[in-house]
Image 1 (cartoon, rainbow, N blue to C red):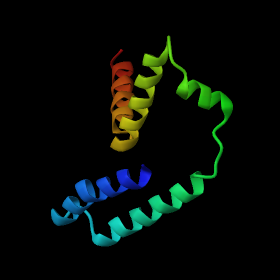
Image 2 (cartoon, rainbow, N blue to C red; image 1 turned 60 degrees about the vertical axis):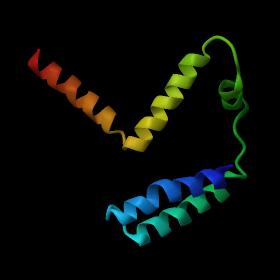
Image 3 (tube, rainbow, N blue to C red; image 1 turned 45 degrees about the vertical axis):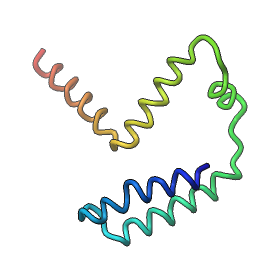
Length: 97
């Protein structure tokens, strides 16, 4: 499944970015190599039982878990710019108080 998602990301995101001039081909090749290396490195890691239970459980509290995972992945994709914005906003509000 990971290989299919990586191939989809390459076709749907990376190639159009190269076409539009957003990335050089060497950027895409290096990121593919890095992705393959990380998949190989993490495939043999064992998830701690407590984390595995938290991620796979059902019932109450799962909506909060799903929301937190979504926000983490979104911020990861955005380079944590949303967190930077919120921190700057809090600093500005504190400065004005």
